[in-house]
Structure formats: structure tokens, C-alpha cells
Image (cartoon, rainbow, N blue to C red; front, side, top):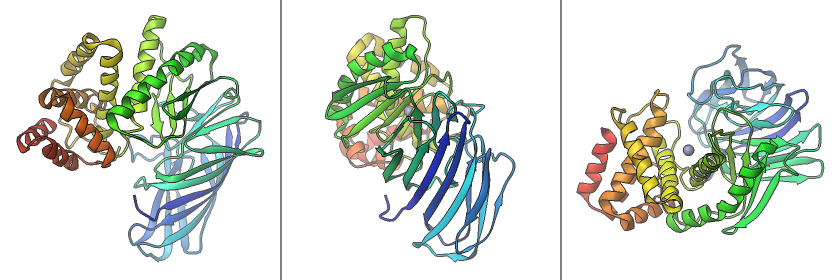
Length: 408
Ligand SMILES: [Zn+2]
């Protein structure tokens, strides 16, 4: 975390019936390196009316979709040329005005504006996203055409509008909007968190109340195993979309619709699903665009397996481990993995979790848990720092051996 960071500040008008947004936003850019230009990305269907600033010589809005990130599949490039070199360590104010529709994302279905709910974030960049995914703070006023509820990492209702105040650095500002949330809601106090669980579609009422009974157990287990996190309000929302999966942002967890053969299977699945996403409240520090993402994904998935062992017993845990071992055969190594590799999901979620199981088995639960606590409390965000910590807690041979496994 740098002491100085960029800030997005502005107003977003949302018309859910017309599936339309109108955005007026100032990016107070923190200049990381001397530069004469800046590349940003924005959702392909947003019409840019103006980009202005005292040092802007010109800007170019591409009309075709850019292929630049495995996660951002429907964005176009904005190139800004400055009339002088911006100096590292300074701030530069850039004003943007744009509007348009953001429909369903074709591949993932994550993010859209629709009349029943709206889900926006970096997958369909509604804010000008920097090419480096530079972390920034956000202060955004959300005005909606109808009375509604906005869920986000840190959001308050202020008169007739909502204010998202992300006063921490993040590469995303995701938010979910629906008029259903004022009624479709379960609130519980769990482990000093005020947890609110929301759903859009009534078919998720049952799952929502089931998860609200379990959340305390999950938070307790993770808190005592991995160490403390900042307490506050936690929003968990189940969306009716069939594709795209879930994600976790600070104080905000999004799950999608899961259909299983029986009601019992569905509940079990959701419990694991929530456990994985909830674990990201701890495992979120590594760069998710590179193989270092295993420090997020493999750890979140292994945390979910620990919950399976805890709640469903060691037999189910072993069954899952054996499945992951099978899947892991012939997969590429973690170290050096390209995040857009077709096997990235299996490598980061299954193989990585299996390697953590092997490590736990080798060094014992006591040292393994000590390692997990240290990774969280010392904000370890790279594999080399992970290996150094492993060497301190165990010995050089164990750390060298883990390196070999990560490389094979
Ligand atoms: Zn995850």
C-alpha cells in the first residue's frame, strides 16, 4: 500500500428500466512513473462525451473490443496523450463524462444493468480502468431513478442517493442494486460482524436462511485459524444469474445461482461456495492477474476444504482431496502459469489446494496453521515470501521441496 493513491470521485446516474448509466467522474491520478500518455479501458457500449484536464493534448477512444485481460472481455481502449511529461509522484486530474447501456456480458454473464437487478464492477468497467489495475480509492454518488438498495464494500444512504465510500485501495468498485433487497434480507450478528444476506429471486429464500444459520460457524473457524480481520458490515448476496460465478470484495460477497439434484445437495454446495468466497476476506493480497493468484485461490479453496473436514467429516474431506489429486495429474506448474491458460482454474483451485493438503500432511496441522496465520498477518503476497516464511517455520529442505512442487 502506498501512502499516496489515485481517487475516483463522481456521480453515477442509474436508470434500471432503461438499463442505462450516465457517469460524471474525476480521476485524480497518482502518477506511478513518468509518462506522456495513459491507457485506460471502459465498457464497450459506453459513449464517451468528453475527457478533459489541463495537461491533456488529445484522447482516442477505440471503437473495437480490446483483448488485453483474461477477465475483462468486453472493454474498449481509451488512450490519453498529455502535452507534457507527467512526473512520478505527482497527481493529475482527469475528468470523464460518458453514458450508455451495459448489457449481459456474453461470456461470463457477470455484470449487467437490468430492471430486476444491476451488478457493475471491473468486469464491465463502468469506471475508466487503468491498464495496470492500479489500486485506487473511490467516492461515488449513486443516484437511481427509483427507490432502491445499493450494496457495496462501504455504502450509505444519504437522503435520496447512495454514497460508495471506498476509503481503502482497491482495483475494483463493484456494486449491486435491487429494489428487492429491502425485503429479501436476513440479518445476523456473527463474530462481531453485522452480516446481511440478500437475494433477488424468491427461490433463494431457503438457501439464504440456511446460510445465515451457518455464517457464524464459518467466521469463527476462519477467524480463530487465520487471525483477525477488520470487523464491520458484511453483505452477502445471491444473484439469480446462472453463469459467471461468485467473488469477494471487502465486506461484499456475491454468489450466483446453483442448481443441484436435491435440496440437500444444493445446501451443501452453497455452504462450500460461501466458505470459499468468505475465505477471500483473508486470502486477497496477491496479484490476481499472475500465477501469484494461487496465494488467493488455492488458499481460499483449501480453507473451504478445512470447513468440509470440520462440518462434514474427514471421509468427505478425503474424497474431495482424492478428486483434486486426480484432477492435478498432468496439469502445468503453478509457478509461471499464465492466468489466461485454459487450465488456470484447475491449477489454481484444485492443484494448488492439493499441494497445500500435502504440505499440511508433511509439516503437521500445528505448523501449517502457524504458517497460515503468518501469511495473513504479515500480508505475504508473493510465492518467494511464502517460501521464506515456510523456511522460518519449518526448515530449508521443506521450503525447497515446496518450491519443487510448485515448479512441477
Ligand atoms: Zn476464489
